[in-house]
View 1: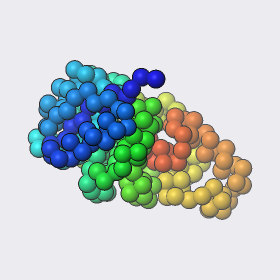
View 2: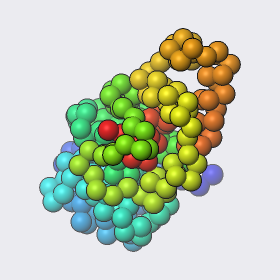
View 3: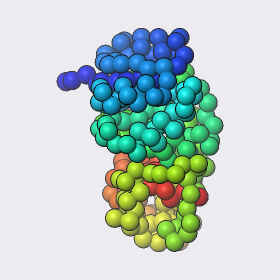
Amino acid sequence: MEKIRVVLIEDHDLTRFGIRALLREQGIELVGEARDARSGLNLIRSTQPDVAIVDIGLPDMTGIELTQQFRTDGEAPNTKILIMTMHDDEEMVLAAFAAGADSYCMKDITGSRLSEAIHTTASGNAWIDPAIARIVLGQVKLARPTEATTTVTINKLSFEDSGMISEYPLTTRELDVLELIVDGRSNAEIAEKLYITIGTVKTHVRNILNKLCVNDRTQIAVRALRAGLVK
């Protein structure tokens, strides 16, 4: 099995050294490091890693701005972005996913959890730190396609994400179920709220998962953010 190739973009030396050691312990290949966003972008373009670990607080631009620029130029389409931060600020979290981040973790993460995050991200799925998941699941509100929508201080989404809902439109009832999923409701609670059976709820959930190309409820929330369904 080939090693996952990772680029690390982090301006603090001690943090960078620590993450480097964790990656080595977990058998993950570090192909390059950068201390600022512009150097990091050039490094991603030249090395084409599987995952780029990006600090959110870089000196020349934020990790969110780096992610947005990276997604816009499209020069390393197979590279996934894992945002790393010390803070679980709600606006930053929502903005990062709207910009196109694939995963989000805290800097106090353990080596085994970092390895899990990297492997999950490299496989094309979202990995969200438990401290972040509560924000994604608890604070996201969904808008109907007919309403004006915005994302937090982000101007452009990826073509894939912005086009997904128009290509695979959700029905009105699926949108009802989707909003309750993001609110953290169980299938039983959704059934009671919408006056439908649990079996019907399960059918709607399965349809939503298929249309949004995700595997679980947390990823539903992330995909909704990145598809521009938030208000």
